[in-house]
Image 1 (tube, rainbow, N blue to C red):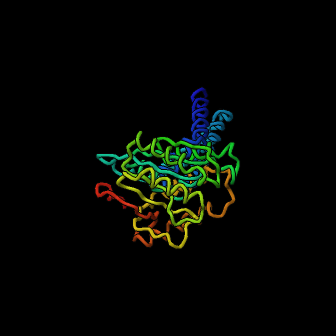
Image 2 (cartoon, rainbow, N blue to C red; image 1 turned 60 degrees about the vertical axis):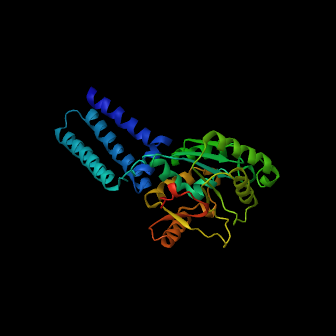
Image 3 (cartoon, helix red, strand yellow; image 1 turned 90 degrees about the vertical axis):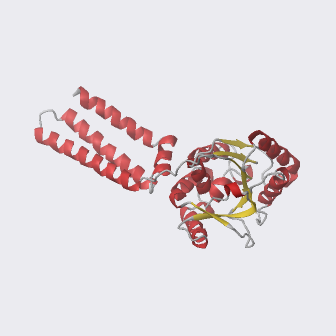
Length: 303
């Protein structure tokens, strides 16, 4: 009975791990259909717990013991098969990883625009750093939005995210401050690649960040512009990055921004629909599109 008790505690601990931020991240980063697999995992371990409790309570019922053990083993076997079938193979690590700096205006901009790309680059071994210029107070609760941005960064696998509190919706008033922030980070990291907003964007903050990046990164060899929901019809991507294995991670990272729940452009079907559209343009299944400001040949292998 003591063994069954220990196994019950272990099963409960595994269930608890699955609902922690780190545990949830494992499902979305390593398996296709992460939401369904997480639910299946919880159901299986619930069955295991019930079976173990039955073994403890019904001490003399041999048939009940056999049924409980069979149910637990069958559930575990089914889970293992599902995990193996849906496992996402990690991409090979790049021999010479590079440093990426991505700069956004608001706490959820990076996840929406290039969350799949950032997660893929992180898995390939590149070091991803992020700057967010405002805490998003004009569009939500600024007491929680920075924390949500950090959660999203962790989901995508970023090394570090730096969140500032410049005036939301008025970032153009902080042009020199933004340039100084970006220049300082460029001098610190010496990034090989910078990702930021496009100039073809209706949102004034996005455009302000774009021009601040161009000024601060005037000597940088590689700059790409990502696609926000507010881009204009003039947004014209020339580079398409395959995120077929990373769409679930992107959606999960966006959903980390619970304060923004309910906004139409954050819906999973909208995110996947855009990835489908850009994928079709790039002859891929699912993709994110980028405008090229300039791109050094040594990292032009992004596809």
